[in-house]
Image (cartoon, rainbow, N blue to C red):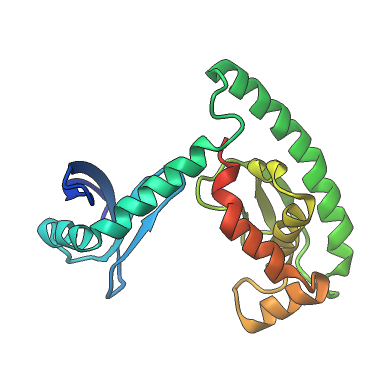
Length: 206
C-alpha cells in the first residue's frame, strides 16, 4: 500500500490573491478521486494509486473555490470552540477531567443500552476513551468499543446515539439496512441525532 504524500499547491481566491494550500494525498484501490476538508482545515485528496502529483494538483485547482470555502468554514468553526482561547496548560487539565468523566459516563450508557440488543450478540470486551480526529466511535472485531471523549461536549442524546451505533456493531459489523434497522429499533429518532453530529460535530473541537 502506498504511503500518503504531502503536497503543496497555490490557489487563487475570489479576490485574486494567491493562497498556499498544503494537502495530503491518500492512495487506495479506488478509481475516482474525492476531496475532504477536515475539522481545522486540513485537506485530504483520496486518489487512485497511479495518480501523478501533477494530476493531483490539478484536481485541487479545479475545485479551488470549494476547497478554499471549506477551509475557511472549518477554521471558523474551530475558533467558535469555547476552549479555543484557553492557554495550553488549562486546556490539557480540562481535557484530563473530561476524559476521566467520559470513562464513567460511557460505561454507564453502554450498560444501559446493551440489554436492548438482540440475544446472542457479541459481548463488550472493553471500553476505550480515545481522541480520534475524524471518528466519534468504533467497534473492533474483538468487541472493544472506543469513544471520542469530545462527545462529552455534545448533547446527551447525541452521545447516546454514538453509544447505540457502536453497540449495534456487536450484531452487524457493517452499515447495512439490517444495521440501521437495529439502530432505529432502539433509537427511532437516530437520524435527527446523527444529523446534529454531522452539522455541529466540528464545533466540538477542543
